Length: 250
Image (cartoon, rainbow, N blue to C red; front, side):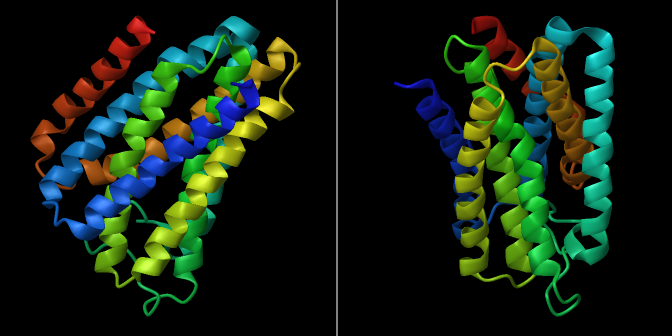
């Protein structure tokens, strides 16, 4: 299989996990405590992946300065965009309860939520393409981490969107679009950075890592603590260990 095809398929399949989580939330009534627990596990998986894969690679490629600069820039860019979207009704887009803003409460919130969901997914997808570029082949631990974490993200968000009165067409339309964009973002990560200098790759890996960590803190952890928070730390630890195991095996 051509490497660019592998990058595209990796992004599409990982993005498709959002659709899987969304379908579970739409057709099955999942208890809020279970949603929170799954989100905690997913957060642990992503934290492990960004530490062991992205930041580690960035340090090897460009050293501390490039890694620190990219990491901070990724977090600042994400938080800045997230603040703008929060003001337009997308603050609680990953919450599964009644926290989300309906269109009746704030006009245009549906579009802001859609853009927010896209913002959350693009950094994860681009690093899949980067992992193919680094070779040989796709980074299985990174792919597994993104796929595993996307299921609870789609599940929690869709449960909240349904409670807020969003239509089935809206919910599945967003996730289908994001799955497609995820594939394109992964392909872009491969094509646009082919032949780039190690320092450039370091900055991009660190940029994605910073954005992902900011996303976890701003959107996933609040939901993880929504119910039965006494177990959140344990579930996040298990998620971290699951990704660590995949990294060690990979």
